[in-house]
Length: 243
Image 1 (cartoon, rainbow, N blue to C red):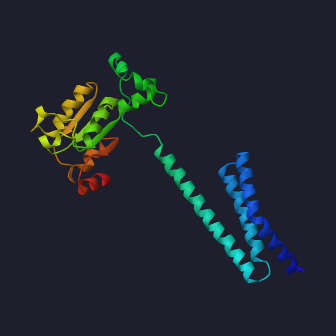
Image 2: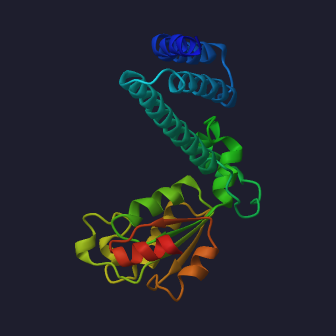
Image 3: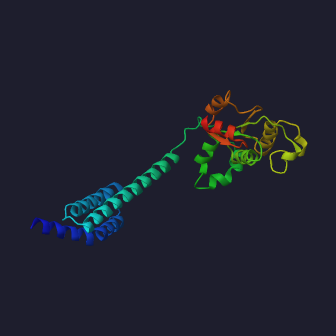
């Protein structure tokens, strides 16, 4: 009698288990359940179906259906863990960055300069103040660093550091747009400083005419909120990443 009951329970889990699982998930989603509550209910349903199929009468078909429920649970659990991990990473990436102390109020000239930013809902006055309070270090003033430096300066980032040991050469000019013909032979960081200050006199530029190496990496990075890699060799890129 007990075996017959268990076999009927197994047939129920086989016929209605997956359908019921999908229907329950859709209903919970439609009702707007919290993720934790949904996970708890679906986990309970899965465990019940697994137990029903496990305690039914022996047989190859029954054993196969039990394995299916186990595989289904493993796949579902992996998916849930992956989704929660992605949500955690997104939440961490959107956490507020601790920037330097708040800057002084904008001058009328600055308000006019940044008017298009301030009008944007996504930036506004508070966002522009955060830009002004930010300190950004750019490693390399070449093909990658040139446009980065110009746009940071134009956007109103308050303090921009640039480190590079090279000088401007004529072969740089077809891609390194921050430099000019007149500044050939000048260290790149000073050429970049001239261009950035000409674009936006309200920012502070800190040029470091030296290589980014093990001796200065940690000390330089510690003074900035964000470091942007504009280098062209793997050794320096790995050092930037470590620092």
